[in-house]
Image (cartoon, rainbow, N blue to C red; front, side, top):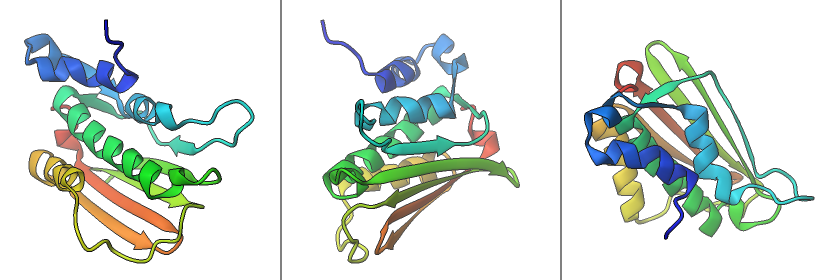
Length: 161
């Protein structure tokens, strides 16, 4: 029997299409914790992630969309960004202001970033479509020399979908 990851436990009910799944909510901090858990520090290592923000409930569809984006960011950070080096770390912060959830992903101490990539991968395309198309939000990437910074916003009225 295949064991599900913590992130799968959050999104499987939303994908089942049942009425119960549509009513189920999760929390943003729970989602961030589940997605980042495979990359967390082992005993004796420095912590790779710092995350903080207010309690934000999320509906099943929103959990699925945000899980896709966070998973894409974490996977790319492990391959090319801050998580590809032992000293790299990521700060994930969020707030709610002016009717929007505002989230920031900030990579530090990874390889130097030489600028915006020439090609957008399939995962990045799906992430953008999830945030902009499905949730009516915005997703921007800032390729700074010291690391990638991502800004995400989603209207709060879309969070419980």
